[in-house]
Length: 171
Image 1 (tube, rainbow, N blue to C red):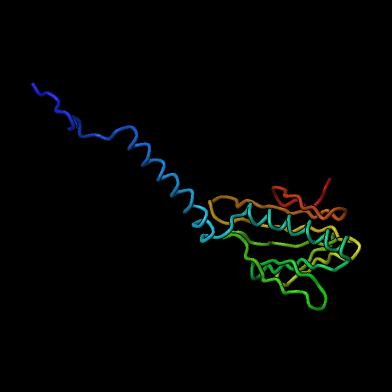
Image 2 (image 1 turned 30 degrees about the vertical axis):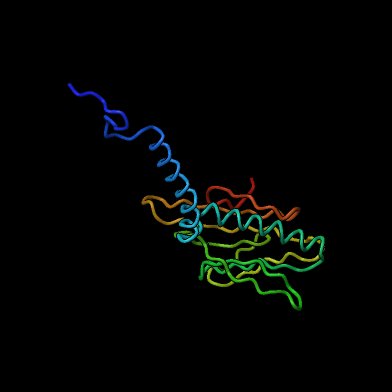
């Protein structure tokens, strides 16, 4: 029969406190590393749509309140977009890439389809004048029918709605 000796452990396992400290350190490490890793991978579809919606509202506000023209430049063949303030001394915004597997399949401004192989500019004119527009996306991967998305620009407040499918009418 074994007896315990003072100052010596009778068990070779971990204590609850040691286990809790290890879990805390792992959680802290994941909390610090995961956001940096996701930035390396690139934006996902929802991030791109949120950035376009926020950029559109900011462009509308700039056009309305600061009386400066802003152009939303969409390049389907390169898979890029950017918001560019017009005027002397305005900084040139670098183009932003779309999410991996996301492609622009069409652009419609004021119910007029634009050729999908050329750069299209959507102008936010001073005073808050913005045309209605739709940008059509297709997401590749996953087999079957690839999901399609439509971004619909509101000409009254610069907001952008994300619609599932290739929505050409509001009927």
